[in-house]
Length: 313
Image (cartoon, rainbow, N blue to C red; front, side, top):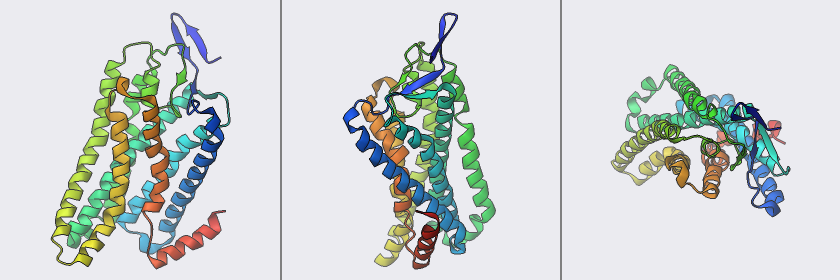
């Protein structure tokens, strides 16, 4: 049983993930599609991590942070996609209460960490392009470790308060989560009590961990663009922009969908649109990471090919 009584309150011991149950005839196609995406995502990001670890020429701040981002994408996708794939094969996908807590916490922590990492990566590009002479001394190995550690620690500490507030709410007898994973907003809709305070706190925290890094990223790129515009040669401009164009694309996709999904009040969101936009940053964006951050140098390509032959099927 997924529901037990405690006095006058209903204690939920499990949730049902509705996923994409509105389209039963499309379940086999969706399973094959997302299995393919998951395979590409895992393979690509694993290869990037292995290449960066194996090639000493890539032991630079930019690739160090890229390695962190790829490792994060591996964890991020694995937290959500396997359970989603299973839902395409079952009539009723159940997740235990504590499993839901763990999934939401890990997902939230990694999302915050990614926001911070993307901001740090934009700052790294700003230093490299706008202050090339002092770049090596400012962005040294110790600083890179401290920045990366700060991102991960902050990411895993930030969601704790929201987790406590959310899962101490009384839930109604309905335990059907209108999403393909345990996300914050669909869970709030199952609560039997007023959630305005939790929604307000959620909006405040989301604004801090999303908009502040986004504004820092935006500031870095405004300075980068101004610097690039002062480069006299067209080739020089193209080379300078090519070092940050891929990161700018990833930032645009990630922040754009995050702000749309978590910036609007809970009651104003369409469940279908919420799931569609959630797919972009939980499933699609991690797949594009290894494709967008292509390692185009000849030596790097040879390293990728070599590692691919040994580690990938």
